[in-house]
Amino acid sequence: MEGGGDKVAVALVSGGIDSPVAVARMLKSGWTIFPMHCSQEPITGREAEEKTLGTLSLLSNPHGPLAENSGEISDKLTVIPVGETLSMFTEPKSHRDYFVHMKRLFNVLGCMVADEVGATHLLTGENLGQVSSQTLGNLGAVEKSSNRPILRPLLGLDKQEIIDEARTLGTFDVSKGPELCDILGPKHPTTVANIVRLEENEDNLGGLTKLAEKCYSQRREESILQ
Image: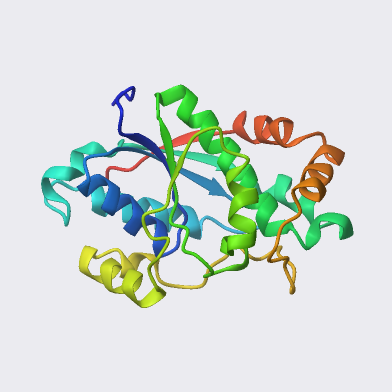
């Protein structure tokens, strides 16, 4: 599958409930999707990656819930290891901003994938206020790290609406279970980001681009088809 059209997005897909629903919504709207997963191995196991592959396999099945739209998703999942890099943000100066740094790193990596596949946008399952990195005070700082517009089709939904949609798609049973992305996070994360402080924290570690390039050099592709 090749990108290059006007409606091509790199989807940041976790092992959680939200992002597969976001992917399904955009597939139904005629978008071509190239999925990406940031693996937190070796900090965590492969559970999140396996759940991601499971939901994407379901969405890409021509006999599945999306039927004729299923062919608009790439048959490969780009997996990028980020665990060691994220652990660098557990130092006292940056730990309260951990989740914002995490999302900023993911966005830079998504843009790197987009450069390769010809995508015009990033796609996330972000939902306003659901977690600390998705407060209005943090989303702007997260978005500044992307050089492409970000699609957030679930932004105004409440959690139950997303769960209901996931049940209809059949992805809920695959996605349910504990979220592992917060294993290194602080007990009291910031809710209103300070962009100057964020960039200073990142620069002290070599800069966000350099950190992302190191992660990206270790990327691999996994087949979605099962």
